[in-house]
Length: 312
Image (cartoon, rainbow, N blue to C red; front, side, top):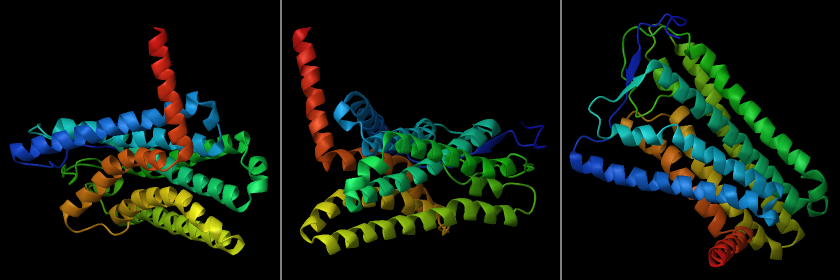
């Protein structure tokens, strides 16, 4: 790969999150607990949806896929972030950096489309309930999931093919605790203004446009419900509030990272941690604690576990 891009650089230097041993220990405990929560919470949702026949509906199939993506997205950065805390040299190889960037944008692109699909699912369920089973059937659900993966791969490849061929011959400091296209591009030994604009448009403007589209869509759903029945408005708002919360948690950090990057590394680091650590652990809590079907499924699953232990 080094020969392909004519690169003289075989490794990059990542940013350390803490200097003092006390802060390193605190961050180690924080990230380890959150990553354990990400793994357990998202795996729990995935297995609950798979093994509980009551949840074999489009909404929960999309939710299980979202949990898989959240787990994958955090796994691209968090394990290395934890291991680098006590490392003197935060070195990442050229190949590992490229792979990390690629999978970050594959997972991010898939999640973006999944959130749009979940909004469409809620629109159909709330605004067109009589046609819901006809429109959101299993075939449509699988089509939406496949489309999300195809667009996610295209989103990543469309940036990756340009970056992999850039000449890297001097600077190695990425300026962050993970590799990402905007930061790595700036290390190239050439004028990358046009390429930086392409990345901003691909990741930043699309994120911002999708975010406002989803917020407007949810507002439209609430207005439609209010016009038909004001009594159902509170029920619809409770249902949609979880989706709106997840949308805000995912897209707001993305917009600040790609459209309006902060001049200080501390704020960029904060939003990156929110995207990779905080959001993936909150999504399972948001969707399970505020969802009646998921709570019922959790009770059924716990009863099955208890009964199987008693039988054994």
